[in-house]
Length: 346
Length: 166
Image (cartoon, rainbow over the protein chains, first blue to last red):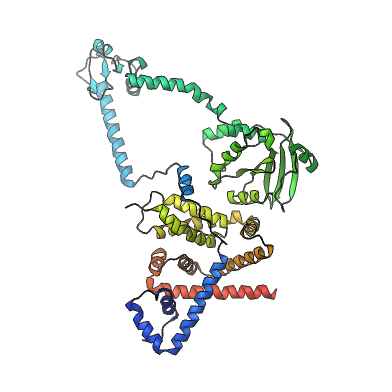
């Protein structure tokens, strides 16, 4: 064997402990070649030195959170559904067949030459009954649980309207279970309508501290409406550190080492809200703060409202408690930067 | 048989954090991304869970790099925090921060393939796994690692000499 190259020597050092026929030749050569033994020792030193350098760069300690934290984080998300091509193809076929059946059925209802113009068209919603039958009107009316479209063929009603009305089952004709469900839904509606007003430890808090944490991502229409409803305009008027300290009952909180641009107070409500603006190298950091005592025990709501967003990199606001104040930090920076800034507030 | 992700988590999480830390250079972010990797792993059943995790981690770190420009202006602040969290002794904090910065810059002087191979080896991958991960031939890993180690050490020593000269 000729002299071992550097790659072989490193591979031998990295893998040589594993007994293998592959290394027999290398070991035989090393036993006979002082030059290669010298180079092996150099490779060993280089390997150790590189490992030492890398070790120095690692985090001092790596805490391992319980696996439950991963499960909780996963549980907070809606599972992403990925449709495979095969599944999409199958769905496409299913949709095509359903469409064809629907069109054919409607055309039959309209164009059936055997049906006289004044004969009614009747449909059953029961799957055990015939789907499409031509039935005298009297028999339709006598059959509970049957949806009917007792329309004259000469009517101007469109096929789509017929199809829609065919599946509208009057509540008093619905099966008992279904009727109960309808009644429950009807009873639930007022509650659902009232939900936005009651939704809201978060909304109440937002009004209290004068801000609503915003998402950078495009909100859904519902979320946008919710945020808009929450966003009670706050009028900030210029204040100073002493005045803010009086309102808060303690010195206003700031991130050390970051220039303070202004200290403002909330001109509305009880006037105990304070806002500090700090300049993060051209990006404005807003710290809205309010005494904990004015939140009437809703501090947990404040922090909990932000908890889901802690795992969401799109979030740009977090709420923390410092001293006797609840602070909401907002800035157009990544969440971890914002979190780091919050951690620096004593 | 489905993967025992809880077991893999216990065995791999710390290595994954170290691997990610050398790519994003933010201890908190590395922890966060490592958890994100496991969140994505749930429901998956790869042949080699460890390799799968590191592939996803590398991809996440790459995405992270795309946001680096946005994040760069805040690095000073974040580094300041990292210093505060690692130790309580200001002198030790300063020294550790200097070490991390020197390694970051030294690794930055390696080409991407050499750096990837070195970090995968340091994360505990064997030659076959590194080859599978990087697409290199298994026979080329020794040579690549030797070159990467030499460049890392040389770059690191050059940076140390420059700092001493200042």
